[in-house]
Image (tube, rainbow, N blue to C red; front, side):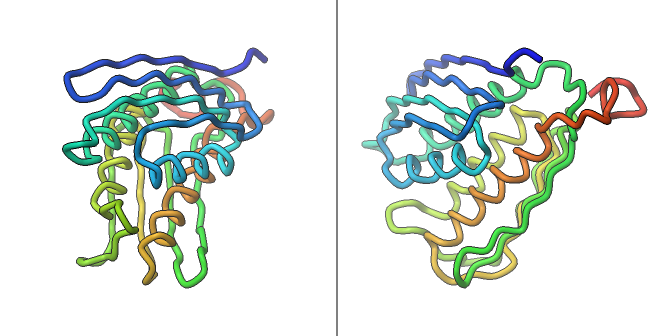
Length: 196
């Protein structure tokens, strides 16, 4: 089976992004977005999803991190969708409960070609230092919209903002890893519609 890879470039007045992903990798990464905490989260995403990921982003972080985080999600979602091709043989669904000390998240994905994000967390969920929690949701929304997947993210409980963000990013990685995986028992496209 050929490697499932994709490369993407995107340039706007707010960000310039170069990204390459290999869905059948070993979790190696080289990431530089200018936002250290986001780099940390994307490194975790690569490692726990077993996706090889190279990414650079030059964004307007002097304004804030919003454009960088959202635009990276747009490009990453689009690249994963391209790398999946017609989705023949994939498992399609993935689910991960991810504990991180006092925190527990649940992330569920369907690579359905029907974009939808359901993001549930209590009001006033704490942020990680220098990384607003709202950006975690923005990243997930960009992934769901551009990967065209049905993505459900729920923070079941947690107190530490770093742990909360990390549990969600790792949960996203593990659920996508399962959904993107090839199942030798699946023939063709895993849908009664014969298309995803």
